[in-house]
Length: 316
Figure (cartoon, rainbow, N blue to C red):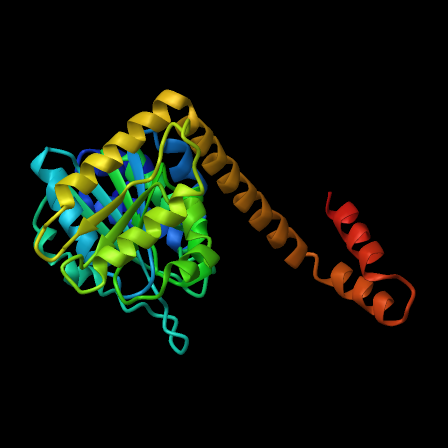
């Protein structure tokens, strides 16, 4: 029996909000697969109240271990947690490594936790293309906290700031000096900095360097000055302080109006992405017109800008 015959999308949204994880998985898959039902699902989803937390940093720094420890901390306080863990896609098969499910296996039987591993599928920015839609699904289905863990690909990590209320940057001793972190734009996007594996040699030096660089980024009167926290995620050391720092940042951002600004920026970015995709689809379907205009460009009858103007006008 097909999904349509057995349950409508409205029924699936209701079921997912009631805790049906299979229904939730189907809703997310619809967005990942660009299903025609995506528009209907989007209209059915209510606005939730989730706090969106982004976790990013260089590969191998311990993002998934830290995420797992944070989930445990939040669950002890009764919060429900949805996780979007973006894994790198294989350049040969397009499939993802999906190692996050292994590292977060301890939460697999917890009905208050839902982990969705997604392949980046070559999408730049360390995030899967469907990430904003999946975040909306988890938010609309009632999760208290939605955590987005990125691939960890250096300079393109800055995209995570578009989707998070609070951005946590993980570093570790011996994983590159602070100057490289500054070049990657990490200092500009981070709200909370974590030096994981803080029991290793060089951890204090890494903390000191980060604090020194951050000191020049924020004035004395700044409403929020990002802390640099030592953590040993494998042992759970420092996780309680990290969770508190995330909560403190969220409260400060709400009080100062920065939270509303970020959420407006997030909504605008998603609208622009969808609009761009719709236009691209229309341009691609222009087929004969686009080919004809391209031939005119090759013959020197039009320049590329004039041809593009003509195509857009024709589709407008």
